[in-house]
Image 1 (cartoon, rainbow, N blue to C red):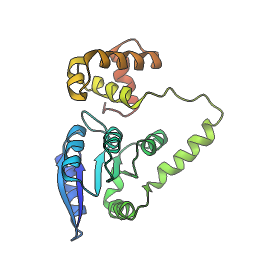
Image 2 (cartoon, rainbow, N blue to C red; image 1 turned 90 degrees about the vertical axis):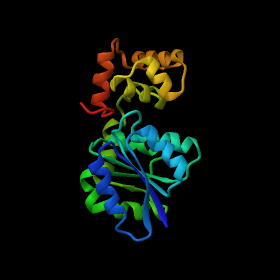
Image 3 (cartoon, helix red, strand yellow; image 1 turned 30 degrees about the vertical axis):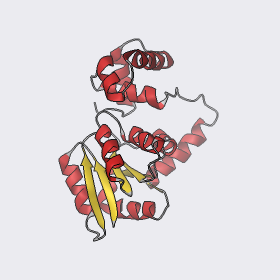
Length: 211
């Protein structure tokens, strides 16, 4: 029996994914999560074979979920669903330990094939993003690289854009307020930004949060 965790903040999406997964008699969804923090907790609790996680989720996006799980030694394959055609996302996903990346719009046609690949130990990345990744490396080979935030800085920027205060973020991430302030200041310095509004616009542009 292969077990799955599904993480998406929309119930209708979770129900649809569960229905697709459980068309196989030996596949079962053992838990559903509505945000990134819950996805990590339920994965650690139920130890599934595959975690299917939406990229854009409250508290922690899909890539941060993967980073957290990998840092805790979780062996489950991570399949991230996204609506964004962004070659940078594929690069970040690979670095975060994600084994599969699939457009949400393609889930009905390709979800089973993606899961089968992951269970077989093979990666599965949607073809369009692979083409974009190649184009990205070809066109940016001699160009200056974009500013890169650390995973922690990116996670804090996402939470700021979701409306959380420094104190609230410290509770969510189990960090001191001073540490949150330090990461926040570092992100703003790297990005050349001076206000929360600038960080929110950056988060929207990078698809960390929905506009």
